[in-house]
Length: 184
Image (cartoon, rainbow, N blue to C red):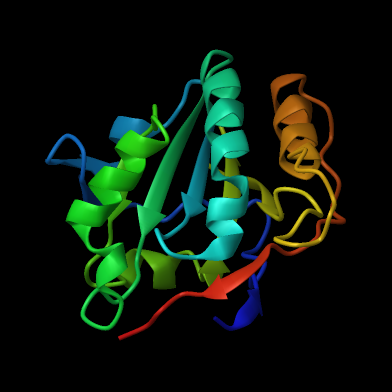
C-alpha cells in the first residue's frame, strides 16, 4: 500500500464520458445513463484498499441519503486485476452485495476512465452538478484507518448539501488520500 493523494481534477470541468460494465447487473452503462437529476457522484474505489474499507459502510448510507435527494452515485474500480486479483469483477460483485450497494459498481479494464478523470487513489471522489460539471473533488472527511477520528463524511456531505441548496462551493478543497490505483 502506497499512501497517495488525489490529483485534484479541475473544478467546473465536464465529467469525461464512459461506457463500463456494472459487475452486479452484468450490463454496460454510460455516464448519461447514470447521472442524477441534481448531481452525480463518481468515486474510484477497489476491494482491498484499507482506506476504502474504512469508510465503506458509512459511505453506502451516505450514498442512499443523497440518492433520495437527486444525486446519483457511481463507483468505479480501475485496478490491474492480473496483479491484484482481489479486485476482479467477481470479487467486486461480492463486495457490492456485502455492503448492499444501491449504486452501480463499474469495472474499468483498460484504465482509460481512471486516466480521463486523473484518478490517483482509492477512494477518489468527484461530485458533479446537474450539468455534469465538477463542483467538488477531494476527501470524504479527515478520518483514516487507525486515526481514531470518527467517520463523518463531512467534507463530501457539505459539498453535496451546498450543491442541493444552490450555495457556492468552496474553492478550498482537501485531496483524498488512499492506496494508489494499481496501474498495469
